[in-house]
Length: 159
Ligand SMILES: [Zn+2]
Image (tube, rainbow, N blue to C red):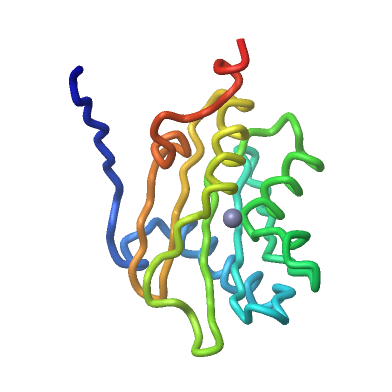
């Protein structure tokens, strides 16, 4: 038996260090968060994604009185993009969140379900998808959805 190691590298900085385009996307994600339907958790998540043709789409979490019916902002936005622009790759996706006290100070990483969906999108488009998680001042970023999922399950496992 041998022990194997998985290295995880991510970018960390302050929002002002992002490119102008990415800072604008953070603003759009923050705006999208304000429109979230989150009457139960009061935790509003917003996403903005940019396609490779420059199209920008936004989305947010949508809750339901039957809790499992709810869907995260990341998948709302991702599926919106895939339903309306199925042949245009996604360049980057920004995630922000706010609670009743305002924007979260810590960047918000996507949940496991969303990581799996982001991985599927990345594999489908066969090009890396940059993910930026933005807090009120700090951000974290990875240049590929695959980096958020070690020992990932994907289509290769079905063969
Ligand atoms: Zn999620």
